[in-house]
Image 1: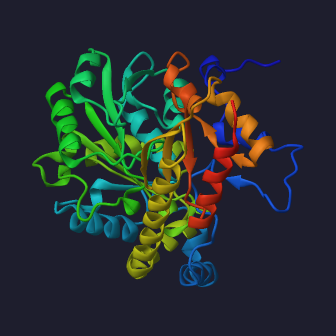
Image 2: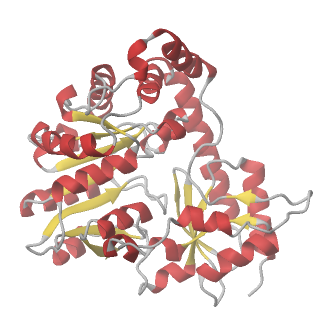
Amino acid sequence: MTPTNPLLAATFAPPVMEARRWLDGVTFAPDRPLLNVSQAAPVDPPPEGLRRAMADALLTRPEAHLYGPVLGNADLRAELARAFSAGYGGSVEAEQVAITQGCNQAFCAVMASLAGPGDQVILPTPWYFNHKMWLDMAGVETVPLACGDDMLPDPERAEALITPRTRAIVLVTPNNPSGAEYPAALVGRFHDLARRHGIALVLDETYRDFDSREGAPHDLLTRPGWDETAIQLYSFSKAYRLTGHRVGALIANPARLAQIEKFLDTVAISPSQPGQIGAVWGMRNLGPWLAGERAEILARRAAADKALSALPGWRLKSVGAYFAWIEHPFAESSADLARRMVAEIGVLALPGTMFTPDDDPSGARHLRIAFANVDAAGIGQLAERLGLLRG
């Protein structure tokens, strides 16, 4: 066999794909169909107007079939800069924005510009597994920062982990997998910490459109020289149901974008043209529709909070955006429990072990529930089925 990159071989298999394989050979009764709460992605298509705009562009705009600028189309970069300036009360210029093939690529590009083999990046745990996978494959050491019982990371504990090899701290808010919304003051403290130590604060806000709070979730973009420390990531996939078109974004210092451009040019050359066309149309035309989507997700959050909090023996630790992080009452590991749930109660969820280091016992005690594609009635059914489990 030809050689395999040992860094690639050493990281784990994609968790969502692994969980899907648990369905092989399993049949579900018509009166108890599968409840899939394993993946945080909308399954419905975008609104018809957005689809028509994309279809019309494919028929009438020759540039829709060509390579575009590596850092993204000028109109979408400008539109996002305007939206973030207005939404955060700060100042973002188009030259501080890059468009990427999804938010995962934005993270990879940022990390490629920040850290190399032997460097360190601090990730709060439970972490988003794709972040850990990329750092593994890049030879960057992931330093876990355990969240407290409130599922919030502590800047003082983070400071104790900083070494001369530390290049960045990564925060995800609203959080994947826990759903926790990080208070603005906490985000600000992490920014101050990163600035003091001359490292980057990378803020992944993939789920910002479904934050339950009104107004700006933090004040970083109002701070003088914010782009010397802060780097923000964003995804259009959840807001406009563009998951298959792969459109993400990052906001950073133009000097960093010059380095990031090298990475993006060698990976995808340029972002998807149809996806960018859809994203800019959505930003200009779907404000009220997106507000309705947010209201529906918040209603499902409330339903999940109520139903899962009432489960005897279970403990709901955090809920927000698309997610609930819940502690189960059984002696077995969540890695085994999650597989047993498929056959016994027809529920596919991801175990906490997929979001924590191997030596962290908290992973074995928790499950992530992704409820974005389950309505309030379905969430009630989910709780009923979880209540049927026995140790």
